[in-house]
Length: 458
View 1 (cartoon, helix red, strand yellow):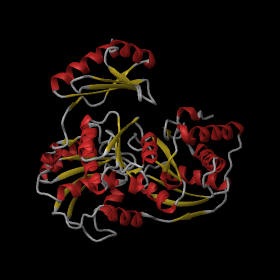
View 2: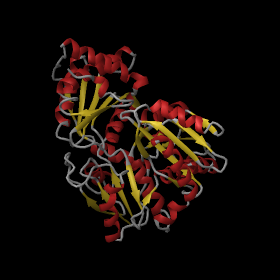
View 3: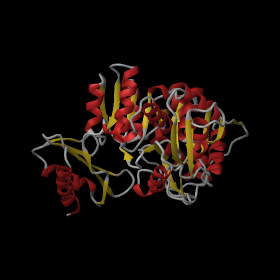
View 4: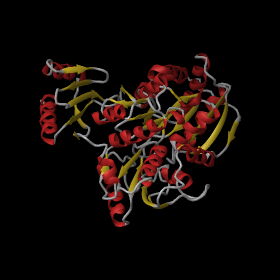
């Protein structure tokens, strides 16, 4: 019998198939999804679902639809989609949604990202725990329903592409050559529609495609561009093609990673700051959300551009909740998730990519020079350490820095007078502590990093 507590995470469902997540489990979650939303007073008589290119995704999505129809809902099945295409459908059609994807995880994994109508997030504090418990009760009782045939199938790719084109106008930028690594994920489906000419008029972009074939076995590399080894091919191709920049999408294409014309990575914090400045130019004085491991430069640049920075916990359900609470115009995470008020406060890697293309194409500097204006500090990157008793270790580290300025919004953050900071927080899914350090100089960053790691691993 499936133990859903092992696969229902802080803000989505994620597990191996078929042992943890299979069609029976998906049916139970589909029924629970509709029932819990209805009991909470949310619209649930009609929902939209979609799936990525993994072999297990279509049958899981169909099973979820069967469970949802058994609970009384009609289902709009959008078929293949990126996660942000599903958010578009949920927002534009005002329907609760479910996306079947395991994002950047290996091929044996799959998962479900769920939202209320208008792409509003569902996380552990906003219904996901109730959905888990209801589905678990159905599984334990052996009464997993299977519904009728109230399923409408409709492709929404062209509508999604047209909507994004209304948000960032790329028609008048200077010509750019762009290498795009889709990692055999859903970017191979959405990039030709949004940035190419398959459904809309051509833009002044020359797209050099890499790994656009949809293949959930990920034959070329993992679809996780935050891992440096997974962008090596992109970096090489940008240099070989003398391209203006490179874009890499993760498996479900809701995250976008950028490399400059030299093939060097552009920090997601720099992208957050750059897009924030663009959005604040259109919407002066608005709020921008950033998670607590983005660079201090983000908050500084937001203030310099007349905006109000608000710090958030790591994770899309937390960011989205803060976006909605503050009516923020934009939000960014150092994991390369970017959120937009004019996209229902949801995250979309494609829209962030379009902002980068517009920023680059509206002036003559190379991307390396443009990005440098938004990079002010030296970061360690995220460093993971296996720790059995995470809370005890966090308490030990807190005691070691008792004289410094600390907060516990998400794990432990320690700030120093010279602008340096450390954050160490427990993983939601693994026995890990995740460390991030930033400082004004490389030497200071290394000093702090090594000091904390000595405590963590001692």
